Length: 142
Image 1 (tube, one colour):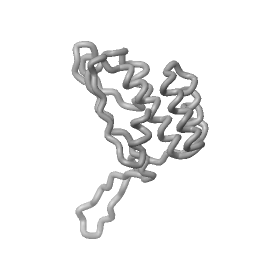
Image 2 (cartoon, rainbow, N blue to C red):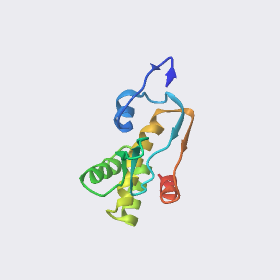
Image 3 (cartoon, one colour):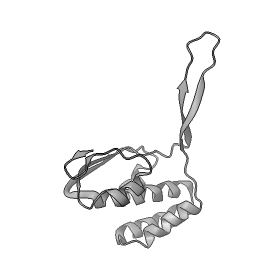
């Protein structure tokens, strides 16, 4: 991010906390969000040795599996009790449709971030969301 308001900054960590603590309202022109896709897979980095008899090694990088639990439930209640009535109504409707499911856990995680990203956008700003067909229809509603 290079901007007179922010200077040069690289934030590492959960974007929800970073958005809430560090990014002012209506300060961003463009957001490109390439979130996890809820693929139910664990992604790895493979380190291959070049020796003939050497074995490769791998490091788990990201677990793209979402399950309904205490954190998802807390996030859901934060959404439905929040100040954004349309988001609350949509989250409640999705809860009625999907129940306490893994897909709803993924959607409430995404909804929290989309609310914060929308808050940071300037009135003339744009948000591009890269998503796959398994959740794209739900994400469009949010």
